[in-house]
Image (cartoon, rainbow, N blue to C red; front, top):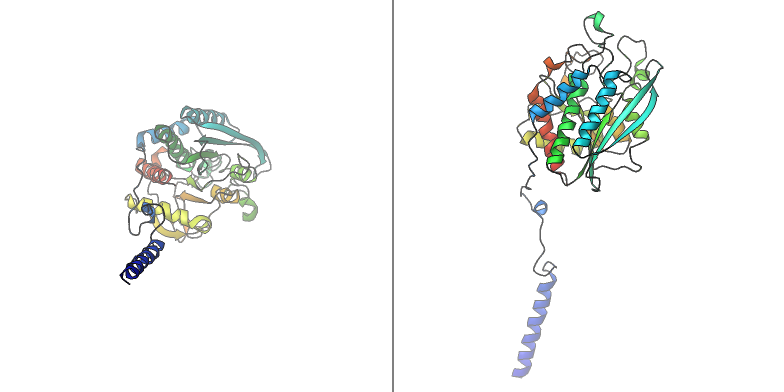
Length: 347
């Protein structure tokens, strides 16, 4: 009887042990929980290399020194060669999309999209973009004698390119965990001028020709990126970056994530947590090309802006005043640092 009792106790102990084991995590010693899976625990941030204001401003000034980068001009060609050279110097594989498209006035206009690929072996990729052409006409200038003159495009064009080129320098210095494709779109800013008689619907299709071409024919068949960020007018004095409506509709999660980075970094006065109207910009066609994209663009609330809904792009937009005197290096640096923080923390 005693022997039977011992056997029974042993059997009962084995049964209890078996039941307990069923509820333990599998994996020989317990599951390893990743930090991102731990409730209420901050994920450790990757600190990117320092974004240099001096370097970024040098890139911006160099573009302005070429003169207006209107497609087909000598300045446009010289700037193209320089951008390609700078990207190659930083270790990128560079390709150029060549085509011709119909301009607002019916003329054929050259389009040169520049694509610089970093970490080509990485499957997960991020697309950063800006347009590198500048406006052929200061059609919003209050001085009518200026309205058919080409502009410097220090903010509208050169600022976004400056951030991309400084990102190339950072990537060469410290490679992020993802592949990065810098795309410099051409012929974004050559749409129908204010003084033309083209109707608004037809006029809308005359903008962003480079990204329209890219959407139909990406630089790689089946190209995919985790997200895209377009930079447009990111260095102006008194800038304000609201959550642009088209971006929120297409990739609101990406925009909220980038803005959260900005606010944690102390740039909440620049990156305002406020949605505003949507616009047609290169990011529209980036989205059409299959890359969920947002636009970091200076859009300032203005309830009386003529024909622009509830915002404007600053008093110097598409005027002869879009020059170096209206660039704020601190704004340019803030945008660059936010973009770098996002790229280096993409997983």
